[in-house]
Length: 82
Image (cartoon, rainbow, N blue to C red):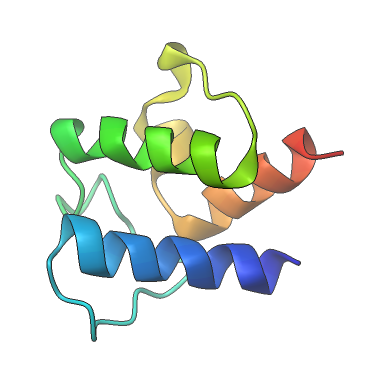
């Protein structure tokens, strides 16, 4: 299940946020701390996660501690879907 989540997140970030649909984002690649995802895109990503995976993301979670890698996001999604 985590594999499906990480692939979906990677595809979304590459295609929608970075406008590079052929790019493969690694599960442990830094998103925020590297500047790959900015604060505006972070909100879009949170909305995508809420809509696609039926989980709630609190505004206070939109930070590097929660959203810095696809692995972190997949773990958050998995924990909330239980």
